[in-house]
Length: 115
Image (cartoon, rainbow, N blue to C red):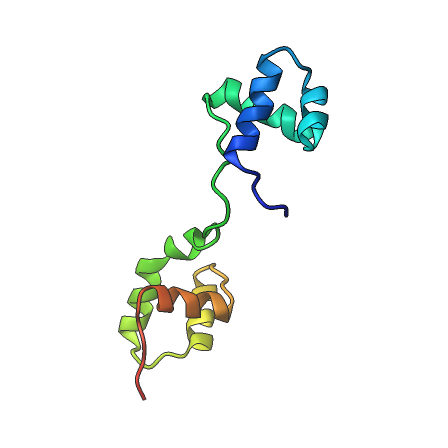
């Protein structure tokens, strides 16, 4: 995945296209791909801005967070439950999560077990 190009460059490419240059010519002049010039011009038409869309971030935890009540209930029922036991109990309810996913869930919720 490439890095996000500057807003200034995006604006200059779009301005060149709006000034009469073709997308291909503007891309060549500013040293970007033709596909990028086309996408940036389309983005200006759709949103009015050439700013990049947000990148990164958490895109996967929503699935386990939807089961937070069930997970917390299972932990409350058996306070010394292990992650493997919890994984098995969740599977009985039709939810499959890796041990690492469960660990990160508890880390996000700042839930720890002391020996």
